[in-house]
Length: 433
Image (cartoon, rainbow, N blue to C red; front, side):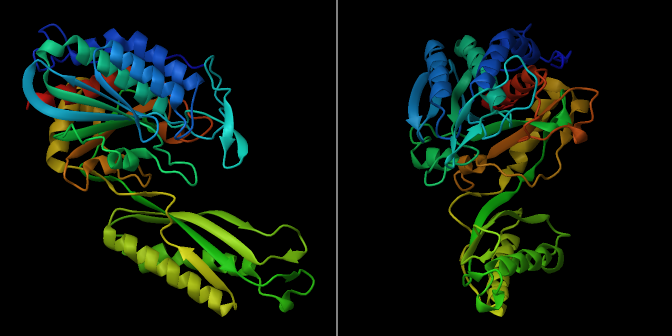
């Protein structure tokens, strides 16, 4: 196990009448034992999307003990806690995601996950390979701090503990979109929503934020190629969907590289699965392809979808095959994770106060996606989402195992950084500074 790196962060006085001797750093350190305990517990007991019952119960119990008004069962296992401060101010929602991934952990930790579960009809290992355990723990730490300063706290806080950020299981709804559909903001109208995510691409102590499109939209697609079954010895007697599907994949590679103006915005078209056939000497009737489309521009998004459908149809026709295409499919669709520019500029100032100006960078656009943008309610509520470094100082973050890897490692020095950064940003926003 690698040793944790605890940072000596600058002592910056937070606003909102917290107390002249108390900084966001000191307050973060005061709850660090609890945050670390929660994080390790959640890490050792991960739960898949829409199955976060144990995590949700712990969260709800802790919030109730702290005096929050708690709602449970939102989007299956989601939890919210509302705290009204003793002074006038704005309303802010802060979101953390709770779900883990169907990944078997390969990190040597005393609290490594040994959990197994059923996923897509098979037994899988379960791991917090994306750091959601830390997000949940840090938000609980913030809940503790806000509760202690309640009489001096301006405005109101809603803490949103979200299930199924990684996507609901096949055939189910879940995640941020379902929380919104279930009325998460029905009785609490936030003036802004903040979120953060730990990332292996940054070292501990570094925080990244970007105005505008920070993370790409994502759309899953599903293409079924219909051929005609025949014996492998006489392929001319049938229509080969394997060859046809292979040609569709090859032809689709030019959609981004030759049909899109990628000098304006990056875009990605990736095939993730190819399923067809049951035996080496039988040409099957069908092949199923799935994949993902990532864009930052609505026009480019539509262009990729139209081009992919046209390419698949024409390649199939040239081979005598047909297709059924769901482009996009209903499995996973997330909007661009858009940071309101004016709010982001103010949050960046808060982050610089919390962790040091030289430790805050402008994040590059990331073609990963998030369902956090659903909390913006179609652009009606400004949102800001920033990144917290998770790779130990001194290690090459670019070479570190990425989020979603079975070797993903979170240095716990990230915990006080995340708590301090979000605390400063939240208090500055609530008090209008």
